[in-house]
Length: 350
Image 1 (spheres, helix red, strand yellow):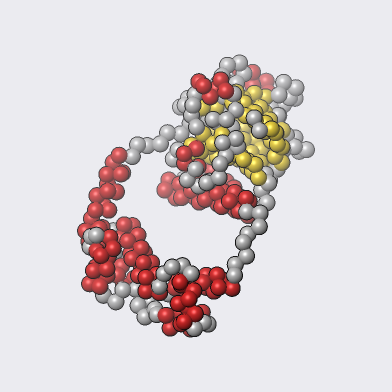
Image 2: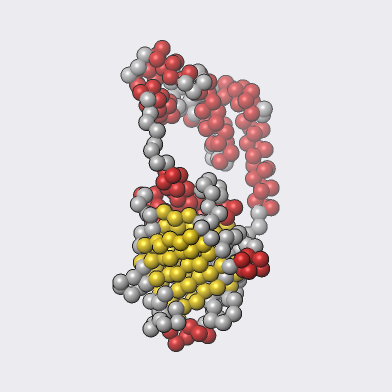
């Protein structure tokens, strides 16, 4: 369930020192409420999923977040904050200038680059954001583009809307979703965000030639029918409406032959299946037939030729490595992003 970070009325905000139930910190920074605010009605809640935190914050007053060079010198935690603006606006300024994000926009701020964010209430008198606080080394596994000084996008891509929906569902969950499933959903959301950012930088997608479109059809047909032991060039050519000779030409565009492509994909699928399955539930023979081999013996010979061990040996080595990795893994901590920095500052994520 989500943890309440803080909630208070205007009369309380000068003395609010709430740090969450464990009093943990993530990175230092300033947060304050506009002095001329008539009311605050501020509420912030968070759910930790591994090393990542999902935070929803609502306020009836303008809020300010600041991470200065002094904060960076005192605390070099490298954290990226992903902002989904739901109501109101965000005015963001850093060394590269300033931008205003409106409801529906998306942006990233990074703790290792100084910035200031003003969270402005909208016409309905409320401000609301959904944050994702991600250690930057994790985010770089999903977002390949450089974002040292932050990143801004108008949320017009469907991937961003889907990512926001997934994060909302995880935050709202009251225990029905297990930890492993919650991590999978958060990873999926990060993958969607990475795809949206990559697509946003592609100003004009390259047009595929006729041969490239045909090759895509061929590769899809092979993927669909990979488990069929009777898969052949004649079957693929007929299914794609081309001649076997033209099929060979298309595969040469990928510097491969039909047999090389099919056996490479079958062995890759088998390897993944071996690593992910329990030998008490799935036999090696079942895996061999499941990826299109005509016999377990043939499968074993080809597998050893490529991977240097037969399937049984490979599965045993993978199990040992997984046990070592699990025993060495330390539980992730979870904590608010901003720590109190004196005065009327609040512990929060922002």
